[in-house]
Length: 335
Image 1 (cartoon, helix red, strand yellow):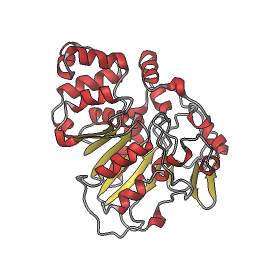
Image 2: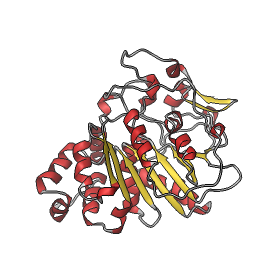
Image 3: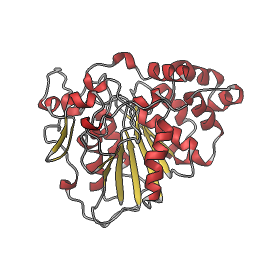
Image 4: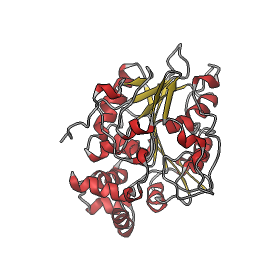
């Protein structure tokens, strides 16, 4: 476990961590999940589960417009935002928690079609869950996914690709197992869609993976490993997603998007979770940075300090409902 975690952290660039929101957080059980239904009156036939990047929070999918544009595009889809942060990778419970706290409850709630949309670390987690439980997942959109540490990707490339690598490798970690599965799987591979920026910092590994996928399942646009690129990729996906359409009219009031966060950055070296408006080429601090990290309803917010301590004061759309007084603590790693 120690070897697996250390390699994953190195590959994700944890040395670059800076600022309170990127400090390690407690891996809560169950994993918090925020629900953003298309309509409060009826369940949609499709559930889209969004998994954030290593520096991101679930709220970023709202602040950056992912939920709003999905609903406005006319797809008959509810959205769940899972707080699948790095702490679950560190204690080895990421895939178990995603199944037990996200996928299984969704199935019990009656969802029969479940798609995963993951960015960076979230893309890696989505692929890992598809590998473990292909029968439970209808599809994966991996946006700029982390796909392995550099030395592993060099081994895959030196072998001549994933198929040759899988013929001799005997990996004992999540990243190596992902590549042997990609080489050997058949039907699950057809469920994967890879969208990324041509200047993404993980592009070498992503192109190795793209070689295994159908051409129309791969999209590469100009851009870096940041929200402006991911928004462009998301917009492209929404023009062609194989998802059911809805007759339910969409109201922008159902998704809370802070008005201050409407800028766009041209920088390519920003961490995953820095929102577009909070990043300017001049490096100036914006009003959005001073706002609470979460604003879930008119009466409930979570400050940056609370988020740093993995304390959440949650509205009813979050499960579980946690507060500083609830004494949320790190869980014991599951072996």
